[in-house]
View 1 (cartoon, rainbow, N blue to C red):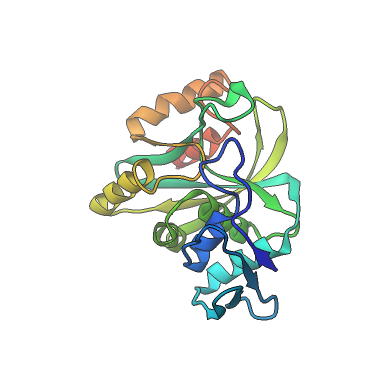
View 2: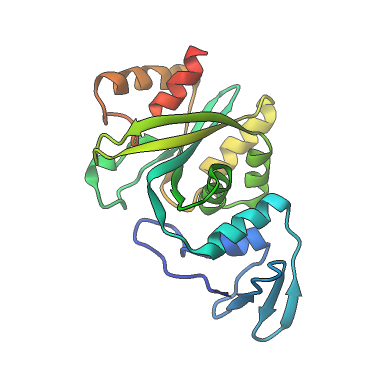
Length: 232
């Protein structure tokens, strides 16, 4: 399978396949194309440099295999992850590059649609690698990732209903979580949308407002997942 950096969509900060190069631990140079051996996806063939060998964790191999399958999105199944620390939560803040103005400046969790026949955990790891521009940081988040079940959510802006399988990644070390905040909000940041950090005290009234006025603070009803954590 041929890997190129792909096209850059209007609402993203980078070309669509650049995250795959990050996953492989390769810095793409303009004009490069790599061929991945479907029988041994730890072997690559470069048009100028011949065979290349890469080292990947088992989880990363699963994500690469899912990308190589090139299956369409499941119309009714999604994934999301709550990233939390002692100081609060890390989220998406949808920017004005999205085509639907109703989504602008609204909060959401990192996540998205599953692919057809894709394992929810693999889908969540894939979305993290797509969104977080640091392979090392994704590895830390995945290491702490705990399944939380599934919940039916309705997007208040598109009125679509989907079954969301969700996860929690909780880092209990305040100093390390500050580093996560700095990397999410600063450099390398996220590949699409803006990043947001909210304390527990800041996010709770926004969750309650969203219950009363759907679509006022959040996209995809992701507030229900955070609300569930407050109720535990």
